[in-house]
Image (cartoon, rainbow, N blue to C red):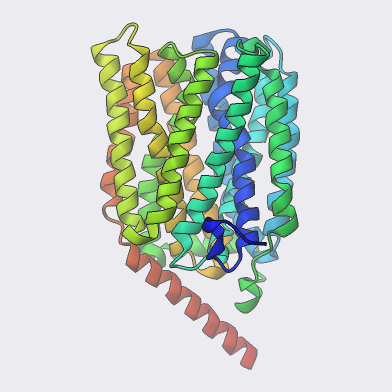
Length: 442
């Protein structure tokens, strides 16, 4: 089979494609359930009270993320120790598909029932994201990790665009414009997710590098405890995770509240679907550009550029709210939405790539578990804080806080030295290989 250009130069194109297909598949949960349709359905239909809906939605998202924070490092360490990363990935994906389909049963006034389904579904989705990311170092090299990460990210956004086109066609063609009619879209999200993870189940392989570095018989608690105890050995990783935590507040908040913010600007119904389609196209095109140029210009510069875009976009939203507090022009949010899409398309893939660079090969699932724990903690704190301030203080205060997240995150990131982080990971690998050789000799 002759693979298209993004995969052709890779030594393992089918496996990278299968890995990227999982990214493509879970976009249905990211877009339709977390970002676009279900937040509005939850707020306007399941709860029926906009102010209370904002508060409950932020609590539901944050509760799921706090639980993921507690589980992530241990799930990652368990996956590394027992070499069951693929099995856990497919298990979390399959269960999330089932719960996503059950969201279609949520009716008017069933707010708490909705949360009882959404919270565990979101937990499974977020854990699956961590496990999926942990395959990245084994699918790439230090020279190609940025490109492979961006390929997966791009496939995710391509899937998002296709999915939104289907949703838009149904909304316009069949008349599914009002939130009360959106339950069919939750079924579509489940089917899309379920079909898309099949290639990963068939072709994605459990990483083999653990066999080369010996079997680790320690339990997950011991492995995580050692990682945290010796955090000074991974100084640059710790610096990055601190910066990532802070700017992650903003990224996770925007993912959870993008549709709600758009509706506050008067973008509703089919226009909301089209707005999200525009945002997804911007993100997808950005991911394509990142895939081509990130390894050339370096991951550090890439992250700085996209954090600057985030700051400009959030500051623009804040200024609109301050200068035009009532009935701001809808076109302004459409314009700023391109900046949000560009920020989403670039910051995720570059952040994932830098963790892959800093992770020793024998502890990739564990380190990506710590990365996932940091990202989910960012979401738990950021979404909860933003939702409560938005509900009880006002939009301007919430947007000011959002801008601050990205600005302070950029300041912290400037302290990260990428080369030092890569060297630390390679030193750890050599030390592990030496220990394994010594044990074999004994």
